[in-house]
Length: 374
Image 1: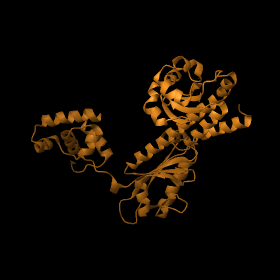
Image 2: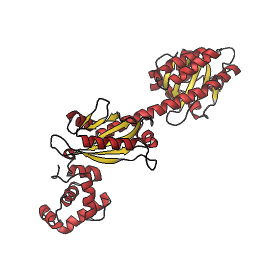
Image 3: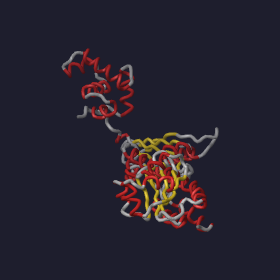
Image 4: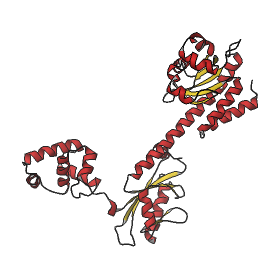
């Protein structure tokens, strides 16, 4: 049925799908040839991911016939790796709509079917064939499919892992874009691997910080640049007690605006892979840049979003953060101090604080108190 060279080429093609999912069509065609079948498909539960040799379209199967597919029903409930034959699954139910309107027109009277994975994908493989005088599930075909199964499983698992990593990286990028601070990931040679828009704006302005020709962060003033590079070096390299260390440096700005506060934090390999989604051998430190001129002002809208405060509670919390006493707040709202204390108790509960001093520290850690928002 298939030579060793053909088997090796097909296995290589299977692993190529991990980075190029469109190659599944080529793999399925190869499986059809290897088993002398008529069609093949990679499916998840009752939906086709890829199909070759099938008419009408995959969309028709997914929108209608997949719900009638009694073969799929049996395969996805079976143990992983269990191979079924058409004799077991197709022959007993030839009086169904699925057989009459899908299997018969496509000449699918026999075949081999195996569940490959569980979980979100619950993927399974079908190699369909015409019904002949002898059953399709011969010993040779069953043996050959058993040899392909671990390679198919590994390819699907690897592809799923890559998809998860790509999604993690997209989620990270989207998250750091919402941060007003400059966020920069640097490699072992201090070159920038990733930065958010806030950091990019800072570098483009060339006011205290910029990118050097090697793609690394530089400070405008010599003494700040020397200290910044020292911090990055210590964050990227083990020293002293054998562990990398971080630190902070202020970077004055020629424009006279508030100095940048630059914090350099070493990242462990586990942190990089688990939360950043990059190769741990590439990203090894995080640089966070605070621009005091761009620190978001604390307002009632922010407090409502962060702590699910009511409009009145948010206004009371903001005035407490501004240093107003309960009596002036009560007078401004034309209510009793008892009512303000009740609002304050609700604020404590929602912010998990217990005293006004704790509440003020919490709110000021978010941002400076500004005027009440809408």
